[in-house]
Length: 340
Image (cartoon, rainbow, N blue to C red):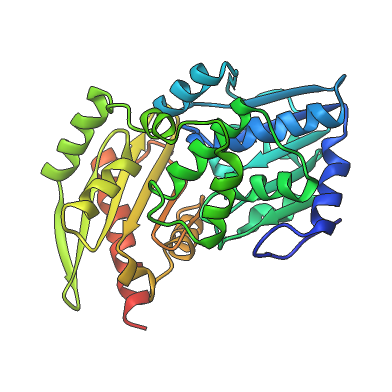
């Protein structure tokens, strides 16, 4: 098996090894549920690169769900993503912007028989153990930035629609450049030729749908505030949009937020966590959610300031009881990490 350690940017050797997989005749590019612009943009760009290397190849992009913003971008650039549960797996599967197996609707046993490639910017988890090859750069603000750097290393300048997809992914995951670094601006300058920056901002600023706004209101109304050494820890629960709810709760004043969503139909519990930068200097949310995820029989991971987990829900316990237990566990484990 071929493994690569984290690098600040893709090396010539890592790009050379990646091309060996992208030249294959059939590839599935797979990304996490509710695929955001960074995941979708990365898949679109890698699919274009594979098609350039092997024009007769059969390449698909798949996810089990996709965000509204991503749909708007796909419509703008006239690209398609297959939305399906448990897609058929070819020999080569490329996972994009995905940090744990629980973020995918895929048969894990069948995936083990594939040549799995991972391109990601989250904290490295056990998912890499399934991979024949991976590039995981936690220091990169977005997966699309990593992939853009691969294009630069190859001296391949992608067409306008591919660059729009990459730009949207970068701006989305950098929170409109708030998390950008020096390399980010160099890549933006490389990608932006002939593209209106205002257009990219417009594609990423579509008004959120009513269900998301209602979820935010419910999360805030159900919120419980606890304190650890003067730090405000917000605990809440919703039926959906838990990630954006956690983000909203931090934006209105909490230092850290844990939001739980129990999905009976899917048989799973999801938790999203967000925190302010001063909290992440001491507690890495990605590491914390990975630990809690394993404790709940699932998987978790993410960034220093934004992370999540997925765990099974058998339905034997009452939903409200599960929510209470999971939120108490999140608070307990955070408190332990903070007080170390």
